Each structure stands twice: as C-alpha cells, then as structure tokens.
Length: 321
Image 1 (spheres, rainbow, N blue to C red):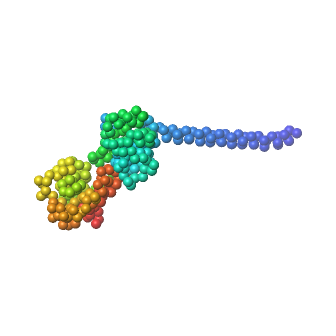
Image 2 (cartoon, one colour):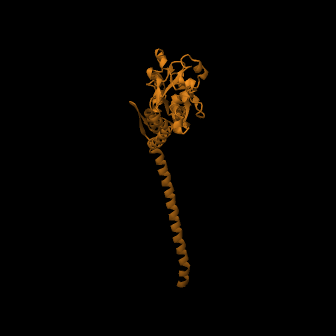
Image 3 (cartoon, rainbow, N blue to C red):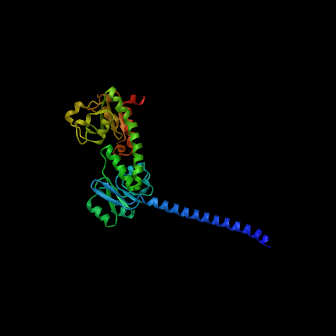
C-alpha cells in the first residue's frame, strides 16, 4: 500500500513544484513588465522641469510643451529644423509656405497679433523673436498664456545658441544631447557649404562682391549678417563702405563687383540696364546670381543651401568645377 501511495504522490508533487515555478516566473515577468512601464513613464517625464534662459529672462518649463503659438516666421523655420513643427498650433501670417503646420491657425504677427485667435488655440507658450507690446503680453498672461521672446540671431553663434534654447524648450534635459548631435551635423553642413571657398581664396585671391536687396544702393553692409557671410566664404564685400543696408551714392564708382548676388524678386535685366552696374565685371562676365533672400532672413537650414550655391558660383574651382 505504501508503495502504491508513493508512486501516486511523486508525480503530484512534481506537478505542484513545476506549477509553483511557472507561477513564480509569470509573477516575476509581470512585475518586471510593470517596472519597465514605470521606468518608461519616469524617463518620459524626468527631462522636466527645466530652466530656459534667454538673455536676462528666465522661464521654468514645467512639462513638455504640446501646443505652441509662434508669431515669428524664423522661429517656425527653426522648429521645423529640429523636428518640432508638429507642436505649432497657431502661426504668424507670414509663416514659411514650404513648412507644414497642419491645423495651425493664422494669428497675425508680433506687431499685430490676433489675441483672441491665440487664446482660442490654447497654447502652452507663445513664441516670438521680436518684442511684443507689454499690454498684449499682459492680456495673454491674464488668460494663463505666457510669451517667450527669443533673439533674432545676427551671427552663426547666435543661430546655434537659439537652436539650443529651442531644444531645451521642446525636449527638456534630453534636449542637451539632441542639440549637440544636431549642431555637430549643422557645423559639418556649413563647412561643406563655404569652407572650400575660403580655402581656395588663400591661393587664388578674393573676388569683390555685392549682395543687392534693391536697386541701386540697398545692399548688405559690413555689420549685417549677410555681409559677414560674404566674408566667411572669402569674398570682399563692397558694401562694407556703407551701413544699415545703405551704400553711399558718393562712392558709386567703387561698385565694380566681380560677382553680384541679388534678391530673386529683382529682374536681372534691370541690373544689366542700370547706369550703376551695366559696365561692372559681374554684368559683363555674366556673374549675376539670384539668391532666395527669405531663406537667408529665416536663418534656418535652407540658408545653408543658399550659402552653398553662392560659394560655388563665386569659386567653382574650389568644388571641382
């Protein structure tokens, strides 16, 4: 009898032991899944809050923004560049046409904002790159909507700093890593665009250039960002003789550019017929190059493409042409 019982009980004990082990494994896996989900949620939120510093202003970003009202076209371009255009819920009337901000409502401009439309879009923040009137900021603040004023960049360093600020706003602490990766790529693209031209001029000499916004004397002068970019690709900017986009007519005899960049809205035939430019080397050697000035003003990634086009037109030999 004992032998029979032992033969029956042994398999049952084995089954119970296996069942217990399986139950323990399932419980352990379930606990691990729950822990993983918790850690995942924790990772998603631990990047916030962050402090966003812009000049003398400080903003505490408590959580990841979901909706942004953007009243400056250059900021819309910058958000597109960093992959955050989907956050835009309201845009300026002059938003870049080539950027998709699906569902975003037009809400005026910094100088003439539609406050009711902005409020209706329920943004977490309003972004501008030039100052909004204090009374308008206060009106929005009363509805729980705060404005962040960025600086419109006037140098490559300022462009890069603003990218860092936007990465912090949109991605919190994680934005630091994202920004460094982005800016490493940015530097490489910029160097590929204009670096060969600068190197080439060390042996070939520099060409004289004009960056013409309007006929005959509205051009990039020395202190302008566009004037600085001419220098950075090894060109001698004739506009250095002027200031604030105004060239002194008294110096018109110096307007003998080897290459002339002009706003693509200008008819090149007008340049060729101009008493100021018709006999200059740029016209006689067919070195008139149309430039998308809007891309330059927006200071985004499309600007690098325009710079590359300008540098290649000025010094094709530097690029193997």
